[in-house]
Image: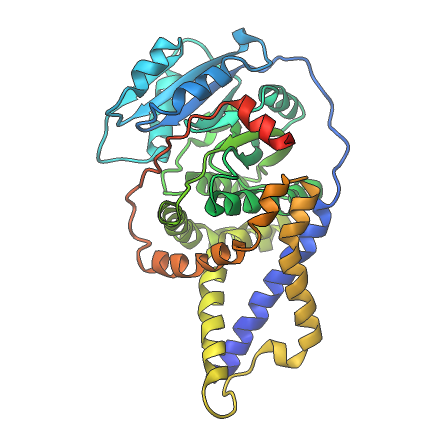
Length: 411
């Protein structure tokens, strides 16, 4: 009985893995650019900040110099429960500093919800809302790309996410490799196929009318994933703009990285528990592959959890004295599953090739498997602590300018 259950679980996980591997082939090409438009959309740029005095100035300076008519966008820094000079720096640089104090409802999701309510009170109406984190940097043409997508009919848009400090440590390099892989072999395939893309927490653009219609309502530890689910439930597919580049600062140490990823996985369990079944059944009834695909994405956190436990169980069974008591799919078709395993592994160096990654990053592929394996204990711990809704802050201290990021990309 147990053997059959374990074999069935392996089949399900294998099918999901093969499905994702199949999708990656649609990321090897890019469709022709959509129609271009003159600047016409107005933007409210929201910058989520909690004690970000070290880095917020660089982003504000970056945003004030975007290649877009200055009268068509305003910058609002959400100073959320700040105890440092974040608000002072924002005001001194001529942008709106919106201070919020609510120690009971902490986290970016709550801060955004509060800021949107404050924004609706203002006399100016904006066509769209853009969201960044205080540690970000953005290419000068970002708003032009958002303007084009909005004019082409997109209502929710995710930009291309990159790291601004990929060579600081093997941890930041691992994040960079993961980002390049996700941009090219997860996001772009879904964009090419007309499926829903996934919001990434920053570099996001929303049609104002849409947010007013459905409300923000995303206050979990992973507000980006939660809002993605809410959109897809309503038949609104977020789109992906490959050319709009946003650079995110990543933690340098393994400890800080583990803390950040634990928060992500705790939130992911919460969202999966609330949205998977409703969205999956809705997709089946409506014959909507986009909704089914998004529901399966929500389930990924359980795939990692079950897959890691299953892997340990099967290996433990193999090394025990005597013949193995449990069957492995690999035993039935070793050549097939060896091929699938190799193809899955080479996706990461393939992403580096396609994305023309700096040569230094290739050296970090050696410890990269350790980073990937570390998701297992993090995910298991997140499963048992998923009821923890306490938001944790990732400290950012690296003051990097856009010019530095761009120069390192070409060196």
